[in-house]
Structure formats: C-alpha cells, structure tokens
Length: 188
Image 1 (cartoon, helix red, strand yellow):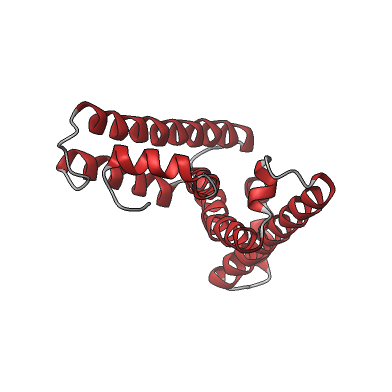
Image 2: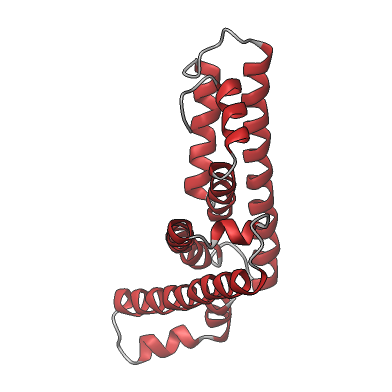
C-alpha cells in the first residue's frame, strides 16, 4: 500500500527534483520495505516462541514450528518468500490506478494460486491411487510436480503454505508412511 500511495501522491517527483538517480531511489525504497518485512518476520518468530513457552502443548502446530531447528527453517522460509512480497508490491502497483483495486486483485490471485496448488497435489495423489503400477517419475506426476514448483516460486503464500505442511508432516511418521506409499517414493 505504501508503494502505491507514494506513486499516487507524487512523492516520486520530489526524487526527480532532487536529482537522485532513479536506480538509487528504487533500490533504497526496496531495501526499506524489505527491512520492514524483516522486522515483521522477526516479531512473528518471537511471538511464536512466546506463545509456545506459555502454552507448551505438544499437540499444537505452534509447538512443532517453535522447536529448535524448525523455528530457524520457518524464519528462513518466510524471509526468502518476503523477497517476492516486496517485488510484487513494486510491480503490481503499475497495473492498477488505486491501491484498493491492486490489493483485491492480488488477494484473489494469491487465493487462486493456493487453491491450484492443493488441487494439483490431490490430483497427483489420486493418479497414484488409481494406478498403483505408476512410478513417481511418470510424465503426469512430473507435470503436476513441476507446476506446483512454479506456483511455489511465483507466489510466496504457496511456498509458505507448502513449507508449513512439510514441517507438520515431518513430525508425523504415519503421514510420511502414507504419502510415501501413495506417491511411491522413498522420502519426501
């Protein structure tokens, strides 16, 4: 929202009047917005740790994320996905005249991307259930897998959703065994 408001209120013209190079201006803005994301992510990790210390419930998802190595992985995944968040903010504002329109369309796009990822994973699993002789590296499985990878790279919410699922999955050996049997692979 800050980027689109800056574009609408004309503060960009102040940069041009001060004779600041356009590359330096946008890089400094990008780094500032990334720093804001970094602070938000750091506070999120601190809150997860704090809530886990208060609740201390091994059955909760916060407990699984707040464990020693997983908390660092969670921080790293969110930090890497925030590179896309800031890029989306800068690129997305050039397509729409108002920040509200851009927010609504982006919200819908991210929702559809999440839905497509889940739908592709179910289709991939149902293909293997229907044909037990099918190998994991069959063309249909690889097509859906590659499409899901592309969704993870392009949409930060899909990446975070998939990694949260993987954190949860790694803590449950029954789920790992069931998925390994369905997908016919040795490990996830």
